[in-house]
Length: 541
Ligand code: NA7
Image 1 (cartoon, rainbow, N blue to C red):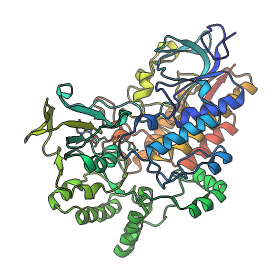
Image 2 (tube, helix red, strand yellow):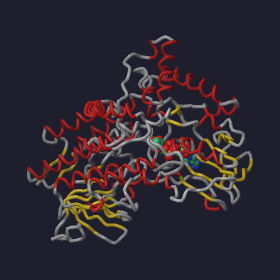
Image 3 (tube, helix red, strand yellow):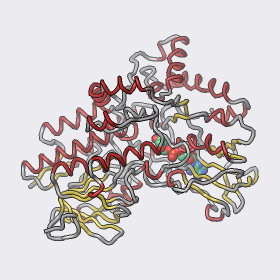
């Protein structure tokens, strides 16, 4: 017998090991606890929260409405929890996740400060052997990875990082003791969402802020605000309908798209709709403001022209405005950002922009940052340089499937999955919101619930039918990989270099990672597969 806490007993595998205790792992924990299965959850952090535990930089905030970016599995939970702002900040989201863990008594299932170091399939025993950096080894029939897509920091490929004599901070692993920028000269490298959210706040106290921009992001004002009590009451009264609408939608949100093309609209109508989205604080609205924004470059260009005008109207120094709006890729093909006062921050005399496309960074030096044009002195450098996204954390788990094949080798030319849920050669291993599923292009909390529910149904099906092994069929997998590529390449999304195309990490194959077929349609497809007895999966006793 295995100990009730799931500690090592090679003779008696657990039913399930879950890796990660962010939004995904926590919901899997809730479902597994309710199912009576024997399971254990491993989490490398000292608490729940995942991405929201680590990304605690100033201004860290969700860009999906909090009334939508939250669990739907418990009506009691969604009725009792009070979000204070339209877009919740990181501290509030982390409080929410902790509340969920406490309310449903989930903490006791999770081993914290425990990093999984290897996950190895034992074909003779038909189970996984999971080892951790604490020296534990646990065997389990099923493994569910819920490690997030943005959880392994990218190492910035800049010389001299270690030489810097001042303070260095990474937005994606921000210290718990808030750094004090008062009176300091701060350099910020990176202008994705993390840079764009943190720069205005850093500039509030720092003596000088120098922003090193390589690729300008598209960003729109978040229009964040406190939630009005009346709107919360009205939303909660309709929660069941709202959740159903989210589940059936393209993006897992309540954003509704237009069906007419921008190229057929008048200038006036285009401007009216773009302005509406700008004021709505919703980049999702802009993406679907016309039917052809994400599929037709000329349509997309109309929106880009509109945004360029906005930047030039806000930023006083027109040269700086030009650099901030020097987009060479279509709107939406990199994750669009929502900001609070980002562009206006560049009107402050102590905030400077360095366009490192024109003036490349040569190295970090003991005193600051040296670009081609010279050296700038800094007391602090903030790296907002992003993640080894989608596969970075999965590869670091040391997953080896049949015949000892490493997942990193099986995916050397890009991820190969069936429905984004499983990979041939890696039986009984399920991935929650990984590559080739809607994951990061939709409301990820909806995507998490969709995946975890599907996986739990699959485990029930296996139990009910005496099935011990579930594995993606290679032919079905080939078809899915082709389908994901085909759907992606019918849009403008794969055009840009970013973490969505793997292009932010030197040496990674350029592949478009998420599935763009729409959240609702994807949900229907995976539900149909389950209802039909799992075609495309090989099920054996
Ligand atoms: P992102 O969006 O990947 O942004 C990273 C930024 O860092 C981006 O502007 C990069 O420019 C820049 N970067 C990375 N390495 C370098 C080097 N070596 N030199 C200069 N600039 C560099 O990560 P975030 O954390 O901001 O956001 C991730 C997601 O979190 C976001 O999309 C939301 O969904 C929430 P580059 O593009 O490589 O030219």
